[in-house]
Amino acid sequence: MLRNGLEPWHLIVVAIVVIVLFGSKKLPEAARGLGKSMRILKSEAKAMKTDDDKGTTASAAPTSTPTPAPEAITPSDVVTANEAAPTQQATTAK
Image (cartoon, rainbow, N blue to C red; front, side, top):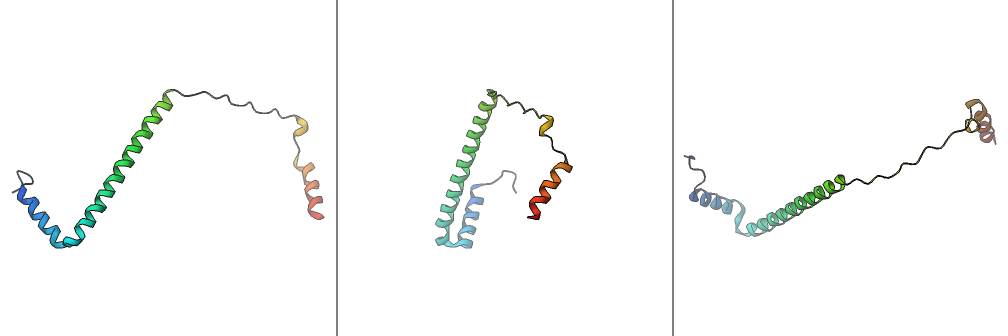
């Protein structure tokens, strides 16, 4: 039955069924919607491809940016919890 795949008369039967189900007035609207969807899909696929191309060229030639050295902490900068607690309590009591 389907050893040769789809034959032309299969497509004719499918077209008749689609016309009967959706009606002749809805078919142009459906075709427009399908066309818009296909255009959107193509543009998104093209955008993804260009993004991939840009990503491969950017990763091929990475630029090195110097990282800033961390600041040195002196012992006078370190405050213990006991020294900081009275200051916080004094400000909250006011």
